[in-house]
Amino acid sequence: MPSPRYWRAIPSRLRLEAVRCRSCENVVYPSRRICPHCHGTEWEPSELSRSGEVVTSTVVHVGPDDFANEAPYVLALIETPEGARLMVQVTDCEPEEIGPGTSVNLEFRRIRAEGNSGILCYGFKAVPAG
Ligand code: ZN
Image (cartoon, rainbow, N blue to C red; front, top):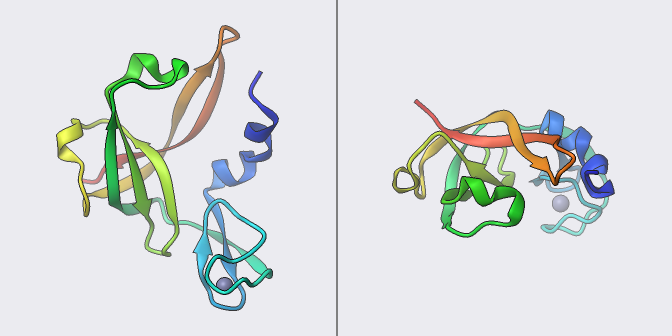
């Protein structure tokens, strides 16, 4: 079965819902209790754009068991226009096409099948734009 952490994260995973700090307007994803910028604790929901730019990326050659069939694959830190940063897999590309500044779209995709049960987990992946 998918872990409790997976189920708790479903609302933010499905809607790409981040939070905006009411004090300094910093946008973070996933949500957290204390703003890393100003230590504020008051938040409002903020849905992220389905696009962004690669800040940094790496190629994974030996992944965890659930991703073993997909290696090599690209993991990238993506910054959305709102300023939120999230780590996602980049798909539908050759690893050498991806680097800092690459424009991507965030698309809802199957992430993996969990263990032998075959339960499917979904979330966002980045796909090169254009
Ligand atoms: Zn803040």
